[in-house]
Image 1: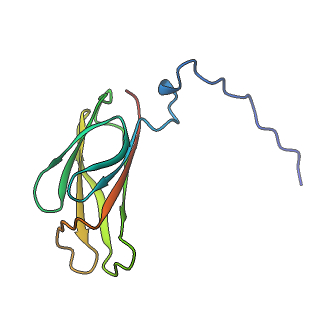
Image 2: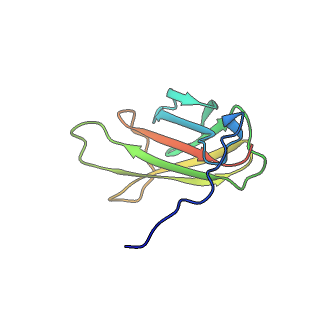
Length: 121
Protein backbone atom coordinates (compact mmCIF):
# COMPACT_ATOMS: atom_id res chain seq x y z
CA UNK A 1 0.00 0.00 0.00
CA UNK A 2 1.35 3.43 -0.91
CA UNK A 3 2.38 6.11 1.53
CA UNK A 4 -0.48 8.47 2.38
CA UNK A 5 -0.20 12.04 3.51
CA UNK A 6 -2.92 14.13 5.03
CA UNK A 7 -1.84 17.35 3.42
CA UNK A 8 -1.71 20.65 5.29
CA UNK A 9 -3.63 20.72 8.52
CA UNK A 10 -6.41 23.27 8.59
CA UNK A 11 -6.06 25.84 11.33
CA UNK A 12 -9.11 26.13 13.57
CA UNK A 13 -10.83 29.51 13.38
CA UNK A 14 -10.59 31.70 16.45
CA UNK A 15 -14.40 31.74 16.56
CA UNK A 16 -15.85 28.26 15.90
CA UNK A 17 -19.13 29.79 14.74
CA UNK A 18 -17.33 30.87 11.56
CA UNK A 19 -16.02 27.37 10.83
CA UNK A 20 -17.86 26.14 7.71
CA UNK A 21 -17.97 22.59 9.10
CA UNK A 22 -19.79 23.58 12.32
CA UNK A 23 -23.54 23.15 12.67
CA UNK A 24 -25.03 26.64 12.83
CA UNK A 25 -28.40 25.43 14.16
CA UNK A 26 -29.91 22.20 15.45
CA UNK A 27 -32.95 21.10 17.38
CA UNK A 28 -35.45 18.48 18.45
CA UNK A 29 -38.97 19.75 17.90
CA UNK A 30 -42.17 18.02 18.97
CA UNK A 31 -44.84 17.71 16.32
CA UNK A 32 -46.97 20.07 18.46
CA UNK A 33 -44.31 22.75 17.83
CA UNK A 34 -42.60 22.66 21.23
CA UNK A 35 -38.82 23.07 21.07
CA UNK A 36 -37.43 20.22 23.20
CA UNK A 37 -33.75 21.09 22.72
CA UNK A 38 -32.03 23.49 20.36
CA UNK A 39 -29.25 25.81 19.35
CA UNK A 40 -29.96 28.93 17.26
CA UNK A 41 -33.69 28.20 16.91
CA UNK A 42 -35.73 31.23 17.96
CA UNK A 43 -39.21 29.80 17.46
CA UNK A 44 -41.34 27.32 15.56
CA UNK A 45 -44.53 28.31 13.72
CA UNK A 46 -47.38 25.86 13.15
CA UNK A 47 -48.10 26.50 9.49
CA UNK A 48 -50.91 23.93 9.14
CA UNK A 49 -51.21 20.17 9.33
CA UNK A 50 -47.76 18.66 8.85
CA UNK A 51 -45.98 21.98 8.22
CA UNK A 52 -43.76 24.00 10.56
CA UNK A 53 -41.62 27.08 10.11
CA UNK A 54 -38.34 26.89 12.02
CA UNK A 55 -37.06 30.43 12.62
CA UNK A 56 -33.34 30.97 13.20
CA UNK A 57 -32.10 33.22 16.02
CA UNK A 58 -29.17 34.29 13.82
CA UNK A 59 -30.07 34.22 10.14
CA UNK A 60 -27.86 32.70 7.47
CA UNK A 61 -26.15 35.03 4.98
CA UNK A 62 -28.45 33.77 2.20
CA UNK A 63 -30.94 30.99 1.48
CA UNK A 64 -28.03 28.86 0.18
CA UNK A 65 -27.32 26.62 3.17
CA UNK A 66 -27.82 22.95 3.90
CA UNK A 67 -30.67 21.64 6.05
CA UNK A 68 -31.26 18.05 7.12
CA UNK A 69 -34.47 16.97 8.84
CA UNK A 70 -35.40 13.54 10.13
CA UNK A 71 -38.27 12.00 12.06
CA UNK A 72 -38.40 10.58 15.55
CA UNK A 73 -41.09 7.96 16.15
CA UNK A 74 -42.42 7.18 19.60
CA UNK A 75 -41.49 3.71 20.94
CA UNK A 76 -43.87 1.11 19.53
CA UNK A 77 -45.10 3.46 16.80
CA UNK A 78 -45.46 1.39 13.64
CA UNK A 79 -46.45 4.20 11.28
CA UNK A 80 -43.32 6.07 10.30
CA UNK A 81 -43.11 9.55 8.96
CA UNK A 82 -41.02 11.30 6.36
CA UNK A 83 -39.75 14.74 7.34
CA UNK A 84 -38.07 17.07 4.87
CA UNK A 85 -37.15 20.73 4.31
CA UNK A 86 -39.75 22.17 1.94
CA UNK A 87 -38.61 25.78 1.45
CA UNK A 88 -36.06 28.05 3.04
CA UNK A 89 -34.97 31.65 3.37
CA UNK A 90 -32.00 33.16 5.19
CA UNK A 91 -34.09 33.48 8.36
CA UNK A 92 -36.16 30.30 8.39
CA UNK A 93 -36.82 26.86 6.93
CA UNK A 94 -40.19 25.25 6.28
CA UNK A 95 -40.40 21.62 7.40
CA UNK A 96 -43.03 19.20 6.10
CA UNK A 97 -44.04 15.87 7.64
CA UNK A 98 -45.96 13.13 5.85
CA UNK A 99 -47.09 9.60 6.68
CA UNK A 100 -44.78 7.21 4.82
CA UNK A 101 -47.67 4.88 3.91
CA UNK A 102 -50.30 7.38 2.79
CA UNK A 103 -48.13 10.43 1.87
CA UNK A 104 -50.67 12.62 3.71
CA UNK A 105 -49.39 15.43 5.91
CA UNK A 106 -49.69 14.56 9.58
CA UNK A 107 -49.62 16.13 13.04
CA UNK A 108 -48.96 13.55 15.75
CA UNK A 109 -47.98 14.92 19.18
CA UNK A 110 -46.30 11.63 20.13
CA UNK A 111 -43.66 12.23 17.49
CA UNK A 112 -40.92 14.78 16.94
CA UNK A 113 -38.45 15.78 14.28
CA UNK A 114 -34.80 16.75 14.32
CA UNK A 115 -33.32 19.53 12.21
CA UNK A 116 -29.71 20.60 11.65
CA UNK A 117 -28.35 23.35 9.41
CA UNK A 118 -24.90 24.15 8.03
CA UNK A 119 -23.81 27.24 6.11
CA UNK A 120 -22.50 30.79 6.20
CA UNK A 121 -24.07 33.23 8.63
